[in-house]
Image (cartoon, rainbow over all chains, first blue to last red; front, top):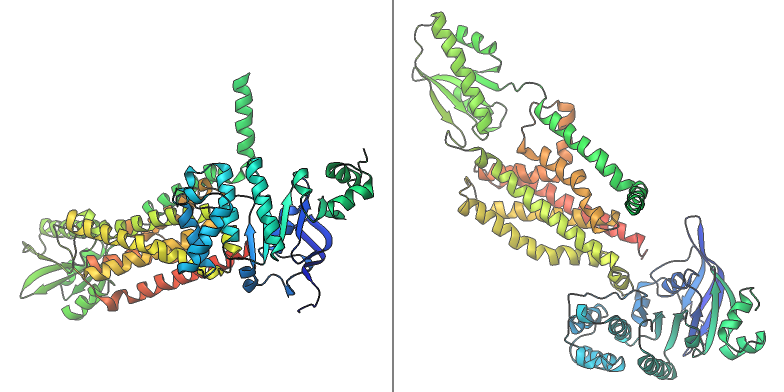
Length: 244
Length: 345
């Protein structure tokens, strides 16, 4: 099963349907190790479905997905993936600290190591001073950041983030992107979905998805020069068949 | 016009929500049917054993609306009474007439004594047997001072332990799904069975406290009749709660919102209440009575009644206890399978 290639994720001919409805229509792509790979597309395009399969929660109807050389889904791989869902999956009655230690223990983190990781992750998302507050008192942006901290907690090799920066102010968004850059430089592969075009520009490579189909793939500059566009938005429109 | 728009919107939503509509229409019919089945079945015919009583009197008893079974000795009749094959027996002991009742249902006690009284009054008036001596009345369980609450209390303990745990556990498990935390849990190495067992243990702690409180309050606070061991009462109450817990969390897989969880009450809780022993099912046609065997609550209520009213021990309730245990495990297993809908592995 283990490939000698450097690719982190390999998606081969993946189709996913829910009953009659085809949500992912034969997508194949690779994500290299240490890369920040963006999945760009409007809501309802199938981004979340694809990302859930990468996170090992959902399974492809046909086709194959392997992550770090192992065919998914596989329970043991969950330890190597950090997943941040689109909705803030937090226990609102508990404090941030309690949420973090709960999820930490699911990854068998404990003691000094857990403490150190909680400190690191909360500092990264700028929530250090709010560690002991009850999550229901958090603002929307703070909840998003806490979700990100939880995804980072067990030092995953692959980070899968579904719309991570919704509701986060531009200054903090910038600092989070700087951190993602640093994580990627340290070898973490990051897969991020977004429908914000300026965020897409920050990814190393982009996959454009529309109606469950991969309509284009390449680096942001590549996609722009190939289509002769000045923005990612124009490039998306071009590939979407609605040439401006 | 605005009101009209509102009315139209509500009607549209209603029509689209087939489930709520079905509930509104079908649930009352279901409950009414059950009431009908319970209350208007065949006339209750007490089963009464007789041991060597004068033949003309026995003949009179047979026409009085009782089912008469003859026994060779008082011991045989006593055994049949203990096994609940008969509701009462009449015998002559030391030359005096004696009526002994099973006693755990005050309603039955009353109707049997009434039938005996009428028969004897008729006899006396007819003058065929002279003045009959007043029979002495004995009870195997309970007694003449036993109230309806003493008889129904154990069932109530079961019903409330079951109902609240079912609802609360079901809604919390559902919330895990609607809030997205279930999906988040499934993105960790946590196994599906670990989620189910974790829920049972976490909630089990509180249902344990609840079981102790309910039992202690009804026995010491409300003075409910208590003949047997308090430990057995606690064991059965706790097991009923665990059954409710596993049942509730399992059923929550089939609800999309808290509201839909509430909709399960008339479907799964109300029938259980009807069939669990609050009402005597003996007058119901046997073909329908088997339904009660599908109700987890029935086993708990039966066991609680045996312990609390009849003072019976482990050997009598062991079947009920094992059945509740088996049901809990079955619902847990079903829930592990139901979670497959969210993650296959």
